Image (cartoon, rainbow, N blue to C red):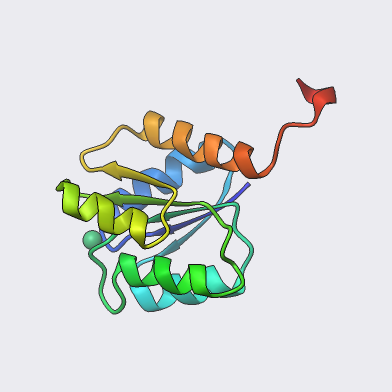
Length: 128
Ligand code: CA
């Protein structure tokens, strides 16, 4: 599974990178909005973990521009400290599939990544 993390907090990005990497996932990290949008539009990812407050382009706009582009179906999980109802609704209106607030559990994030992946890529019956 290929995962993109768009997160400007280095410690958070590193902890997610390590956790998902230990599960065998291939992980890319973008520390700003410009690089995040560029990678999301040019590489194939199974799941994107997206912070909202980012230098350059914010997470809402990345999500909207992704949905307007041909990569419209890639699952996006917003991961943010913004916990207001308004922020959540705006996230879903931007096209996000899931919304998780900081502080968060790496175990829960990994479970959410997995279920998003499996919704797009059903497990072959011979592997059940
Ligand atoms: Ca941030």
